[in-house]
Image 1 (spheres, helix red, strand yellow):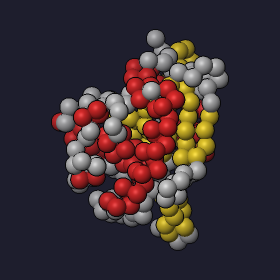
Image 2 (tube, rainbow, N blue to C red):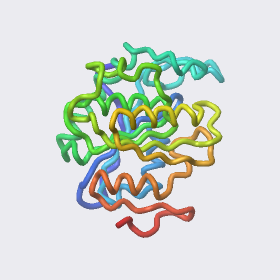
Image 3 (cartoon, rainbow, N blue to C red):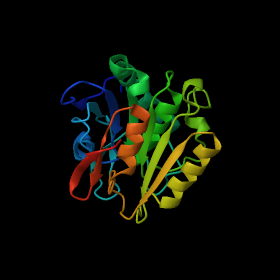
Length: 237
């Protein structure tokens, strides 16, 4: 798993920041491309990078192979294939380093949904340069998060990494309580955590409006448009 396929979206005008998006089990990059488009990120000068998970494992619903970052049962989220996760990190670290080389680590956010949120968080916490932040939707708290990090702890560069967490109150796959537990853990480590509860279920960045754009505006220094029920509205100040 040394090479990654990925989609990308370029800023409408000047390149001001980048978000790397990691999808969940059984998804494809286009699922998060739609999120970035809904948020109007290209118009705000934000480049989007959307890697495709290269591993395939049988779906619990159909038995057919589906994309994932590492094989995992949705009924045993506490069982994480550490070697599989580290294997996923290798090409993603190379991709992230290439992207930060374009714009700078302080203008780069790593975002992820569900299993992609676990990969995004551990990738960002272990990165050697100080990133702008990480945005996680429907994440779960691993039983030993430190054990998933390369040095057994966040890198000194990202030991105070800003984190945004969104979770659906009706998520039956990853319960809201798991995201709240992760919030509390990261807060206890000293990370500034923004928490937003949504009424929906297990859908990538479902219902996101002002909270995530405001977070991205704050950590990237780029005015990302707020999103309303009817679409993009006035830009955040």
